[in-house]
Length: 194
Image (cartoon, rainbow, N blue to C red):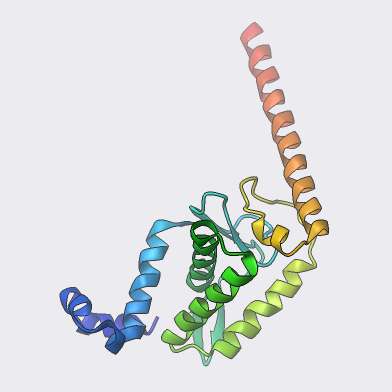
């Protein structure tokens, strides 16, 4: 991340005392770092629309098939931080201001774009990369979905087919978990009788 070089030259007290509009790329990256400290990332599930969030907003989910980086001009560009920013902004606007997903998504997209550009990364290249995976991931079968995934975006998009798929996968996972737990309980009872 290019901004870290700039941060080494400036003492933290100076960062906050200067007019923040003079160093907006530094302030934006500091804000992103603060957000990253407050949420947990989970990349172990199939997530429609590439990324999402838990109902309580404490976990950001990025689809397990989404690469963590891409190469641009010979540099490895890590994408998680930008997707986490987008999802956190979106979730906050939906929960706190009661915005519809479509409006919250547009604002979150602008925040994501600003953060990408603040890191001196081509938005066009970044967006092309992520959109490619949105399409590929969207055509995949959902096998694992977190039970606490916030489905508001899919409801606001009136994506009934996707919602039904999500609910079916979560239901099947719960049945499998209960069956496994039942088998474990049976094993414990059998062991206790020996």
